[in-house]
Structures are given as C-alpha cells and as structure tokens.
Length: 346
Image (cartoon, rainbow, N blue to C red; front, side):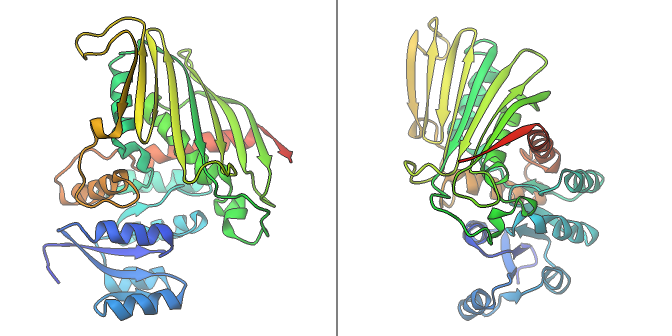
C-alpha cells in the first residue's frame, strides 16, 4: 500500500457503487482498500478478482478494520444517517450519494457536525459538475439574458413503467424512495445552485401511476422574494425517454436560455458583440464546452465530482460545489413540498 495515497472504502455496491468504484479507482492518488455490501455473492466476486481488497457486510467493520481516510456511500438513503455519523465520529471524510437523507432533521444534525470539523463532506448531485449546465449558469450570472424572471425545470426517465409490488426500498418514502427524493432532488439542487434557495413553495401536486406506495410524477412552484418564480415537473414513468434527462429553461428581461446535458440554446433580443452572440437564437452543443476528463463513465460530471472530492482531501482544490450545507437546502424544499401538497391516484 502506497502511504501517499488516500485510502477509500465504498459502502453499498449496487449500480452507483460500481460506478463510483470504477471512477475513483482511476485517480492516481487513491487506493480502494475496502468494500461493504449486504450481498455476499457480490463480495465473493470482488474478492476473487482483487485478493487484496477487504470486503465486509457491516459498514462499522469496514471503517474500524480497514481504517479508510474517506468513504463513498451508495446505500439506500435511509441508511445514510447512521453511516455518516459513524464516519464523523472516527474522523473519516464522506462522499454520499443523493439524496442526503430521507429526514430533514437528520440532515441538519449532520450538516452542523461536519461544519465544525475539518472533514470533507460532499453529496452526489453530479449535475452541478456538468460542463453545459455550468456554462448556462455562467451566462445567467453574467446577466446575458438580463434579470431572470421565470424558469422551468424538468426531468424525465423511464425508471418506473409498470406496476410495482411495493416491496422495494424505492417504493417506500421513509427509505428515500419515490420520484421526489430520487429524481426531484436533482432538479431542486440544480435550481438552488443556479438561483439560491427559494423562499416559498406552492401548488405541489403528486401523482401515483405505477408505484404502489410512492409518487411517480410531481409538479410544484418555487417562489423567491425578489420576484423570481419557477415551476418544476418531474416524471420517472415516461417511456419515451431511454435514460434520465434534465432540462432547464430560463426567461429573462433580455432573452432566454434552454439547457440540458447535451447543449444549450440562447435567444437574445439584441446582439451581444462581446460574446459573439447574434440577435435571435444561438445554438451550442456539448462539444463546444466539453472539458476532457481523465476517466469517462456515464458522463464527465460524475468524474469531475469524485475527483473534486479527492482533490479537496489532498488540499489541491478549495471549492466544494455541493457540501452537506448545500444539500440541506434541497432537504428543506422537499420537506415543504411534502407538507403542502395533494396526491392524485391514477
């Protein structure tokens, strides 16, 4: 073991755990020392191909015995709180998949704990690290479209397109399941990143379509005291989408911008000679703004975020785009949505 490398443990080895393993394993200053999962089959396969890897069925054993410098948590959300708190008590840096927790009070407690420590803490809202969306944010911050007046955020996927049994953790809201936690959290976090935390939430409507216990569609209105207003519409039961898609449209006093993972369009009332933008529509693609990543899987934003986590620990970077304090904002908005909503069964 190279003593100059950061020792990483991964807790939860489902789809995201595997994704994070492949990405973080490519970093030259990282050594993955341990993996924990409840599936003994998965652990035996891992051990077969990497005999030096320590495997556990208990996260406490992973932390206490393999003594990682940092952990990556990819478990169901209801398990995040005890794992994060245990890591804090033992001085371990934490990267945790979204959503932060399925409980606002727990999120507040963890945020306060880490705020008073030197431990790096980060939540996996990877959209903040996307090249196109960051370019769109840059243009909005520069007021290229003037003052933002209205926005529309949408996210779609085909995650749930048939009746569920209700036994999966994703079909239990208390576990962090349902479209609000699983998908809306991404869009809400992106809105927080672009415009700050909304001051109020109104008109939240939730629909059950295929899921037995949780919502499959949700819409809501986000309101700011400065006059900015936006609507969100999230649907994880749309079979017309092969994979998740985020779209953000912002209308301003001088034009508007529409952006997703793959490109952006900007409409201007007047020409902007400084940025070489003509009056009317200007169209750009991911290839126009893409910054190469050292390792690409499922999108460069995933690599950008995990590499940022490592570089923060090493002290090579100072900017953490999504620490616990930022993620707590999303928890507060979700809490307001749940408290002021109606549910429709289809």
